[in-house]
Image (cartoon, rainbow, N blue to C red; front, side, top):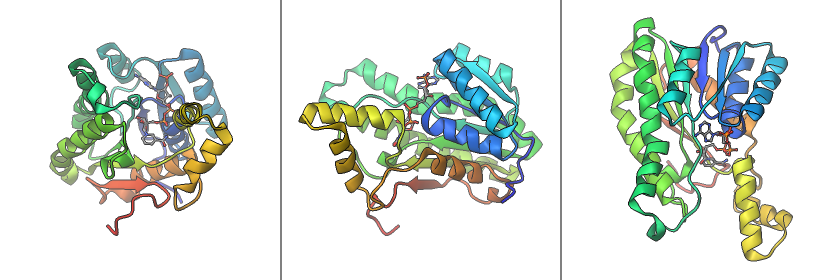
Length: 259
Ligand SMILES: NC(=O)c1ccc[n+]([C@@H]2O[C@H](COP(=O)([O-])OP(=O)(O)OC[C@H]3O[C@@H](n4cnc5c(N)ncnc54)[C@H](OP(=O)(O)O)[C@@H]3O)[C@@H](O)[C@H]2O)c1
């Protein structure tokens, strides 16, 4: 399917690995020029080279903390007027909510809510002027269904979702869309390190911990990051202009509700 976005410019935050990387790859495959981002410069440059080699797209690496003012300035220096913005950031560690102090809570809200809003503030008006914009926010299935130990992440991401619900409607007439992708259990470094920590805690092997976790998913497997990336590229497509303010859960059937 031709997504109708060849030549569009995209900033994909936190994209040297995992879900962000998969979104950048899928957008590059669709013909976009892509800015990729991460803090580890060597890892990021390797990713940029891999995406460029695989797709022939122009890929620019911006090594920076997406949460910092300097990092955000560097992203917009590399791509002053993106047509597409994919918001992503690292997630907080698992922690019982009783252990969180005020600063940790504020940091979590900044990382998983405020940073995305700041980036949208910078990107949205030129999108409105050009009458094309696609904003995709990577949040989490935990916005729909609680996950023990991730309450801070869930709350911050639900806050982002509610905050942007009104923003999405305010720009819809200008062909600017704002949507959310809610990952369930995807096979990324983050998931692998969670599984390793669980295996260590329970005294089981990593293979056994992986199998037990996968067995909790109706699809009986983890999601492949590529599957997530293609969903992102579709939400960024020309054809998806009538889809806005929506939360797309991609979880292999874990969420048990009918709607
Ligand atoms: N994987 C899942 O199943 C799943 C499920 C629900 C929610 N999520 C959420 O989805 C997001 C992506 O998850 P993932 O599994 O793809 O994680 P991942 O494999 O750990 O990759 C995270 C990426 O973000 C970059 N990053 C982290 N902090 C950054 C920062 N401050 N500035 C710039 N780049 C940063 C990392 O690069 P550097 O470390 O080099 O900066 C890396 O490229 C996270 O917020 C996670 O909580 C994931």
